[in-house]
Image (cartoon, rainbow, N blue to C red; front, side, top):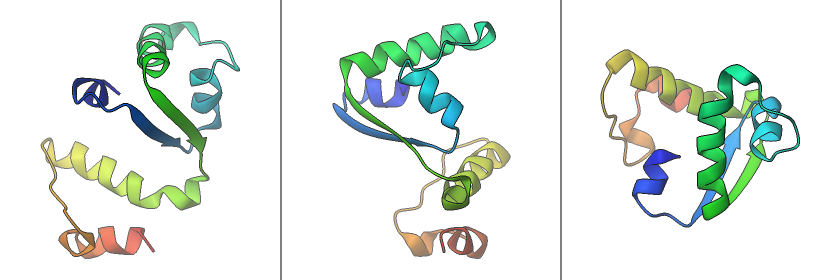
Length: 95
């Protein structure tokens, strides 16, 4: 969310496979105390932007999991401008 804030995007679709996170960000549930600072920061950004928060099932999120893990493993920026820029493992995750 900080990235989108810096880039001045106004309309954002935020998808999460965690129904808990979705409910906390949309203020349907209270924030667990140990996450309060980060969640409140995200909520401030959300109130200033047009953010649509969607819950998606974990099975539909394998490509996002792959990309997040790849980013952690490589500890740097990943550039994939199209489907074929992904490794075969990444392409399989999107099917």
